[in-house]
Length: 259
Image (cartoon, rainbow, N blue to C red; front, side, top):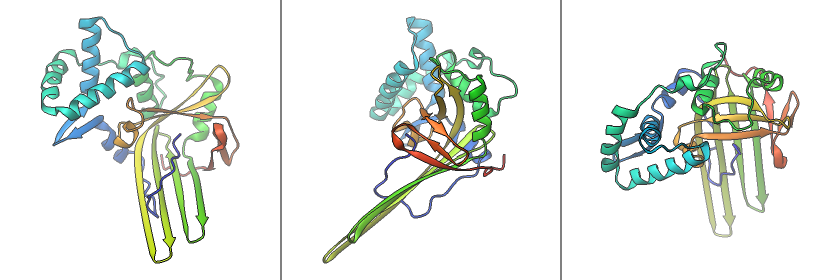
């Protein structure tokens, strides 16, 4: 789930503005960095094209996750050696694969990008159902909030999450929290925060479940989802609350994004 329990987190969470700042974060399609070297999504795509053209291999989303994780580990072990090999593949096997899908022209940039990244490998997800279209409109401009806290004597902690969904198909997730430990003769305090920008889209499943599909190449996302995708199932919702499976929920505030 998007919402994570954070033991050490910052009192205030900064929400990045939607639009150009989100685009700047994502344009690099960064997978990993080490010693000033960068492993990017374009290099990974060239590697996949090499496997298809020369080796006859095809890969689903699931197998791409494992493949990207393996490539990342090789990069972290020997960045210069791997990048030399990938550079040759990049020149020969980089392709414009946006034609794999036919996204409607009215789609916002972020929604179109997600469909192009997925291509035909979408399983049972359906983007153009009535439910998906209505929920996409409903979610655009919304700010979702979730929080929790605990206290025991002099010790306690809290965690806080905000996700801002903009009509251009971008989102910004902000996580923060803090921890205080107090015992006779000793006190400790900690706090931290994380901000992750990305793109979002909505799909429905045959069982009428709605899926908010999040995509980001930010390191915060790639740490948990090597392919950059994270599905957020919506069990049910009202104008004020979105309920997730397992009992988690988000409070919704409408009309919070300028675009």
